[in-house]
Length: 180
Image (cartoon, rainbow, N blue to C red):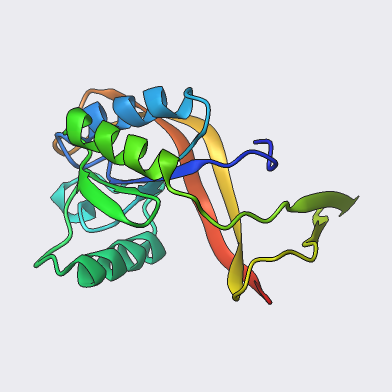
């Protein structure tokens, strides 16, 4: 579990195990995940599944999320590997220099901050505590569940014969409340 008391820069990687250039971006995301102050998440998309390998972590919801970013940024299409930094900056996950610059820029931007508390109520239930704050707006409270790491042996498609390592593989990204 990640400490929730620290401000972090969110780095989202849109990737697919069927994409031949994605393993390099996956490795970069793994490096970023080790850096303090970064929450690195891997969103596997499903539009590469037709090439011969069905990504076991691909989710149409991730593809829709990426399409929403493409619409917001005025991009003519979605692509992999794409990295989105704090929902503001985007670029190729293969362009380390550009992404690194985006992370540096995002890290210095003052953002509203709310200290969130989590308490395990039962084995499968948590309680979320959101305190009063000077933040003057509404915010979505989002539950993100992800696997720390996954290793997959790919037997078909563009990455046939490779063992792929993926970190922070998003399994659930779900709004659970609106906080006012």
